[in-house]
Length: 492
Image 1 (cartoon, helix red, strand yellow):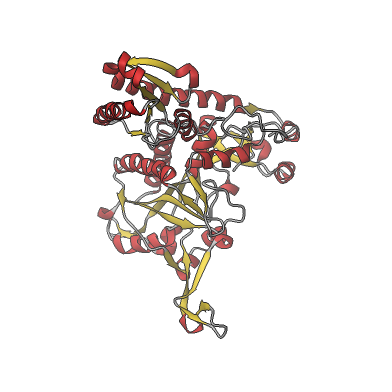
Image 2 (image 1 turned 90 degrees about the horizontal axis):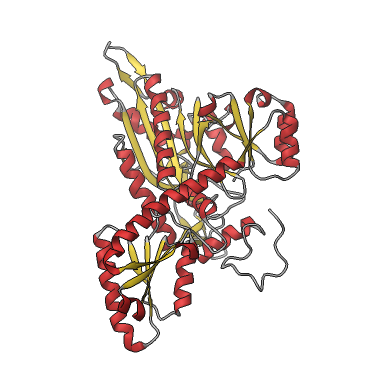
């Protein structure tokens, strides 16, 4: 991105610097202006504030419904995992070893200086790992729960937190502790497992595109980018406005890797003991970071209606205290009507100035603003504004048609956000023919991803040098190209 402007005093946008001036700083300032999250006192961790957590709650609500339609059951497993469990799968732990937090004591006591410290007498007989992911601990339960072919398939999910020690944290995108869901399924055959891993990726694609309004490229990870221990990793990759990629969700075909280490066996119909085949799949709070970077503008956040904390902000514009009670009563009636139509709404009853109320709603990205003042009540018409259209989205609507007009506006906004983001995504991917084209593209500091023949990249020392020099990665082998092409980009 371009260097930050030197003089921002006369800026005409709510967020400074703008996306063009400094995208990373713009991102942080959008989060702050929308009051979504902040850095925690614990290094690398974040505090998700109520407005930001409401987005995650809506993600949970809608996605949970979708996975239960796939016959997935929710459960909960321990935060602490015995080191011996993780050590069973050497390849898996090697991929996470540098990120694992280890619990070694179970008690504090005062030392000789009178300071609280780990009590030397309370050292654990076996260290515990704060879960970086739960394949090993869930594998132990599957070992106990799966006895017969009748117990399969077993489809489990948990909504939880995990910890991976992060050296370069960024709110929502990379934090030491983050929230996610992790699904873990077991099957009788290899074919069932791979089909389900692909199916869950499709559920992710459906959700991310149709609820978050973020278009994605679905494909397979290259061997070097696979999840540790997996035989296939499937991914949906999104592209942010600055041209960098963001892995939005993954689904892994784990083969029999974890079934072997956890001894997940079942008695088949033919009377023989067989190893199960397992998968895992996950999506985290980093999707909220993607949401911001795909939809936000220089005035703040733009929330897709289907996951917005509230879809409508009713803004009472009170110029005369004599009108206040009447205006607030009118707003209450509108609010009740909208809620009766399953439209989430919040009325700003603060004593803030009208302009401040409006800008607060804009920066938070509330999909629709509804202005209500004495004049609107007298005329029987309210002023409705779509956040994504700004002044061009401002219309007058009769009070009697208000709910229907808002419902239509929300539906159209959801579609438009996806369509506009998809159009941008298509413009961000450039087809190239050679590794020279790849080097020239990134040397020129162009923004976006490249698509080229995978045969040019696979095992190439020249490409390995390009990756290191320009900090680019292979994002995926798109399904639409049958694994013949690869997407290369800088990424978050």
